[in-house]
Image (tube, rainbow over all chains, first blue to last red; front, side, top):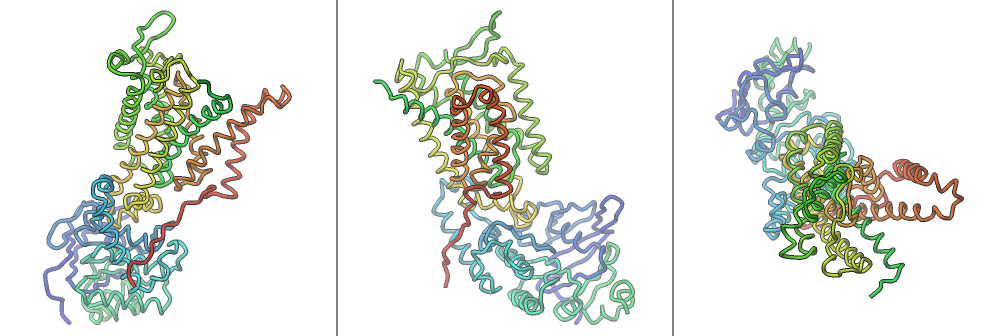
Length: 257
Length: 332
């Protein structure tokens, strides 16, 4: 397989980000094609999570640009990016603990009229209508990922793997076109890992783009269409899983012999 | 018509208890639902109380015996009585407290919880010092005296009946506030507030404008605190800056935590329970030997401390735990 077709859905240009003296990203330039599952790999400290946080707007880059669907998005707050269809899940699940599983999904819907104070009094019918619509969608997603029976459970009571599924489910609530997944299956048992990967594959077939950080090489090599290797804050190599496996630089820096 | 003494006693309990319940409800929006540690509740209470007091009383010029204070009674007295004036006063108190809340929110709401607490605590002290030192406006430490109640002109010359009517008004207003807060916090708007309380960064990443929601919750809470201040001014009849020291803020926290942070009914219950303990402890002084009765104020504080510690240890969620919100399934 050669480089996937189409204009990139996500492009970064010379992103630089330092924390104190630590150069987390150093002129990082890369592209992600629409409809792919693109893997981002690299040694610990290569800047993978930092890159995700810059893309999603949680960190402002020191310099450089980020384009999503051709539009410049660096410096924009996360809530604007979610409206544009770009979301991210956290490496360590950040479930809203004292809220139920269902509420965790409902809060993740976008353009909710009931979140505007005045609408509660002026447009209460529209508020209720949208709530029902959100709930229908949330229930559908919960059935797909197999959390439906747990919908009224507090999110804090879920197992580690279930929390990972919850992260993914929340991301789906806003109808994203692109989802950044920070280690979606790390620490998850094999059965649940398969489930998560299945859900990702199914959503990709619906045309969504996945960009994921993962250390499990089995997952990366079998599930990704394209792999980008990050090393010391910059792109070291990219290609199909097969070419990456054979790339001498990558083997030295990351994969080992 | 004369009101029986036990009823007078009871309404004189209900009025301050109801005002405390309003404050607990207001703080519950900020702390219970949103997780904003506002350590300056007293400031917004004071702003509301002074706004109402200044609107309801006539201007007093400075003299040798009294520093004087601003007053606007001359403006409304020719037109209507204290009942209408009181309604306007409470609205002004609400608006001014909300406005000050908004001004303060813009610079400090971006701070982390601990710094936010320090900033609001400082604000409370600044407001208290301004009220103490802006003597020609507030009469300094002597305070504003003879603040009329809403029923002074409707039920003239009968303070007991006025108190009964006032208690009714306070409780009715409390019920309206409870309904309002309950409605908005159960709605999607309140759900975002709880999301922020649970994990601010995650809520941001889920696509919510966290800063805007924090500001809204803070200003809404401040507005209700201002309204409570208006009610307090008319209840006390005279106010001084000392009514609004930092301890007032912490009493409200005890009520909220006692009743159950995040549970609107619980915090009102907490306010009533706290105030009844206070009320009873004042009245049982007479049954103790004088040597002990003298020390009751100190013992009261110690007892409140013990209750709070016991609560945190054995029931940190409060008497009424925050309710889990479940939804019947809409799909099969």
